[in-house]
Length: 227
Image 1 (cartoon, rainbow, N blue to C red):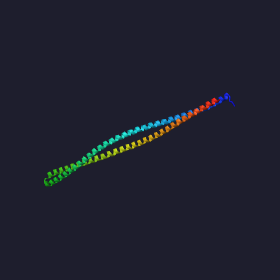
Image 2: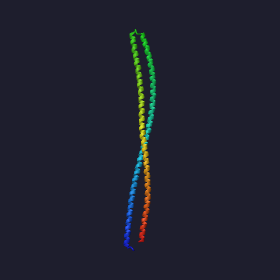
Image 3: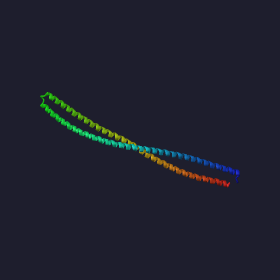
Image 4: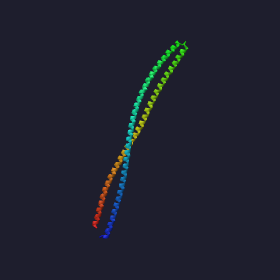
């Protein structure tokens, strides 16, 4: 049965509509894939920016840690100097002890002299007053050096503990930041792998779509030539 020209044109029009519908569907799918690819690309870009910010922050924390270590070294030098001062004070304390023993010996000597001059009330009273002043002065010097020694030892201990706690806290923060950067780097690698896989799938899909469109054109040309 031979088709009329009108029937052939109508059949070709319907087939052309089908082809155009498929073409529009393919275009729409392409647009969706391009938008998805753009979103993935934007997510990867934001992730990279975040990682770079964290890397910069880790660099700042490392610099702060280096500064703290320098300060701690300076404090250790200061502590060593204070320890030297403490040792010097201990030496002075020993000297004061020796001086105190000398004063005690002089006190005993003066007491012996007081026995010899106990008939002289005025001279005895002056000697007792002088001995009391010497004893009070020796005790005052002894307490002063003991107080200075205790103060220096307490100051050195407090400074050492404080520096240790501050440096320990910064080391913990730095370790956590470095671990977070490593996690973000792994996440970025996974995102790049997914993006690469999507691009490969997209290339294959475009190639398949190209072959399919070419086949549809060939069928259409064949139908037209047969009619």
